[in-house]
Image (cartoon, rainbow, N blue to C red; front, side, top):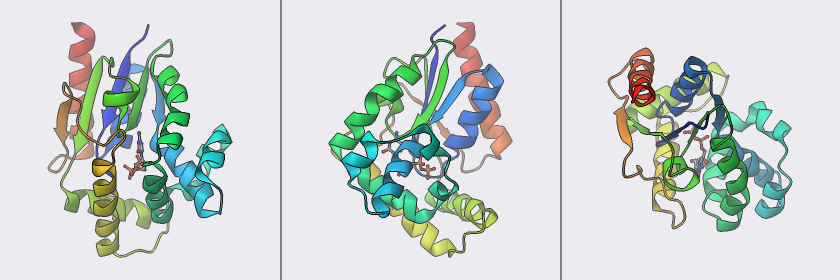
Length: 203
Ligand code: CDP
């Protein structure tokens, strides 16, 4: 069975939580594509050339706990504007999306570029204030000291760079369903996503 759920949306909108919950509920493989860009960004922060870094990417690199830091997130959004970097990551993401058994991928360009043929496309969003608040709390929990104002500024800067770039900009796919999680508890957002997917499966 080939069945792809493409989940896109701005920073800290809840894509990760929803993707993991859908993957677990429907027994699908999950790829957080942001980790690919974060892993390249982390190597660039350490002095590597972006193209050399992306070509030498190793699955183990995606497991580093440092990838969640605000500095790495910003570096990720800078390497993500580079055509060579994005092209290098295309094949891996496309074959993951169409793997047997089905897959959930979350990112910025999954429904538009990586897998336009996805059976389900969601665009998960929330107000910038809500997203920054959630990200601040996540960072606090992993011991990162940063002000809420700085988190909001980082999120807005990243959103602008992701939406305005020439290649694979962050934009809802034409036929994507939008889930605004601003006023939803995470459980409610997950329930809404499960209902949407279930309806497609039953068609
Ligand atoms: O977790 P969060 O939503 O904050 O970010 P992420 O999904 O880990 O993505 C980090 C950065 O990678 C984004 O700001 C984008 O610049 C880039 N990215 C991308 O360009 N395309 C993707 N499919 C996924 C991430």
